[in-house]
Length: 107
Image 1 (cartoon, rainbow, N blue to C red):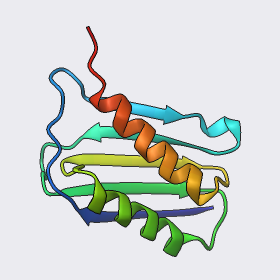
Image 2 (image 1 turned 180 degrees about the vertical axis):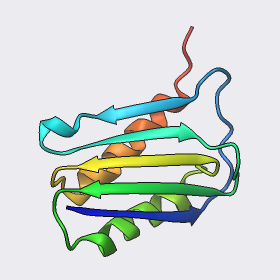
Image 3 (image 1 turned 90 degrees about the vertical axis):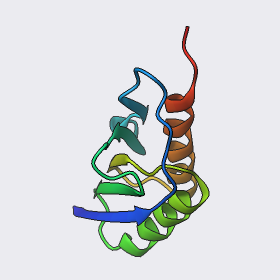
Image 4 (image 1 turned 135 degrees about the vertical axis):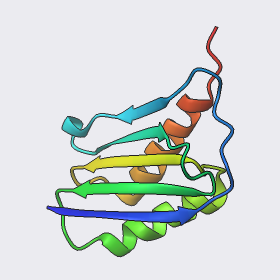
């Protein structure tokens, strides 16, 4: 198992009123889950914690997470990922899915 933490610079995210978190995916499904949580201490970076069942892919993780942080305003967000061998495209999909869940307007 590989675990690591990394912060990425990012433009601040304007969190929807009343939302504190968003979840996408299910780790038991054989790919991964992504949890976004509000981190009011730091507004200009995305803090990430990754736990993966497959070691040796840290550089791929860093590239995918860095790309996401530079393309989406996610500053002020803590991202926790639990992975069971998802392909890189699924990683990007789940990040975007959690981001979309977070910004979704609810009645």
